[in-house]
Image 1 (spheres, rainbow, N blue to C red):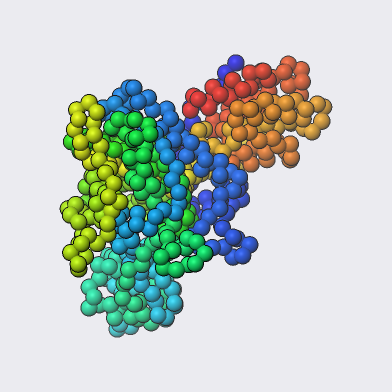
Image 2: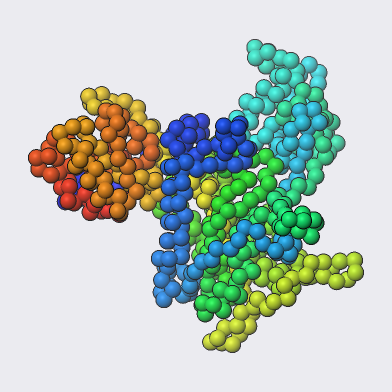
Length: 549
């Protein structure tokens, strides 16, 4: 017997970041790291539901991109037959890896300090607007956020010592612009985001984002190493090992998930910008002549993946980088961006970047650190500034006998940003009847069933008359196939509400009728429809319901 359900309907989510963050803590999705000691900025812990959500995202990514791929067939839209495999490289690598990759010299942001407030900011994240009052004209600033106009107004009122009733005395001039676009001659008029006086920001200076550590007990400069800022380099340095050990032919994608670390100047926006995060990356190696086609293939395929798992096409964009934005290694890059609730209306935040890296990385690790024109950087002595491994990382096609350095297409996704996007998309408030049939507002996480931390919850209607025993047996049967939850505490309506907030697609209730005819009620989270299903068919019914969505 199948469930009487409708496909997962997704009304417009409730776009309130404070409510989403509150639910994440209340229901065990995410917690502030080291919270009992006041927290550690830029680091987040995943709770019981959060760890299941992120695991499901990574499993869905690995399944869809790697294990379910049939390398004997051409995937629809792919330019040719291709193979996929994976590796798991270490977090700490040889320091020379980061010199040849360019991270040691080029992986930095510009920061500024406020001499008055003693706070530090990323230079490119400060915005401002000209305002005049009491015969004085200043450039009021704040950090980019959805409330930046209100913050600019409050900042200016404090400076001019104006009350709310007198704010009309301020005359605003021009649009909000980035501080980096302000002419240097006007910097003496800048009011820093948390300052009370003008001209308190230092000159911008470089800040390398890699975390430095030490290998061994001596701790000298020769023992210095770095936590990896990305997982990609572990794939590049193992390219030849993978080819030689597996005998895969190109085109070939090598996938990896794992932790990366970036010492962000100003981590912000919940888990969007963190200092420790998890990546899901593919380095796709192909013939240079076909690399443009493969770039377009992976760009479009990754965009569709997010939509297939529930992100609305109305809140996703695929943005090609302008030439001025391209990284030092990139021939072309497209960002998959999502309209996160913490961003101003009409703005998007990066979910994933798909980059055409050319042969920059393999050549760099062969020959040394290269410029974008693939010429060796020479030191004052005329020798290469950073020597590569000297290993031959080129590829020889066994069919054509052609030898070449492969081009690389890199779809690089963040598991944490993906989890945040799916949570923001899923959060919704709607109307549902309580036990007495009265309509009340409920909070529900409309997560795609593949991503939902708990697939089904099992309730005995009451804790007597043999109902708990039947419910526990169903729970144990389902637990062999899904992550399920047993709950016998409180009124059944409140139990439904708890599971709605957890994003559980189905709730199974054992009631008095169950003891008579061996059937249970299965409630659908989104449609609220209830179906009577035989106890023996519960596993099949849940499997069918999950597969249908």
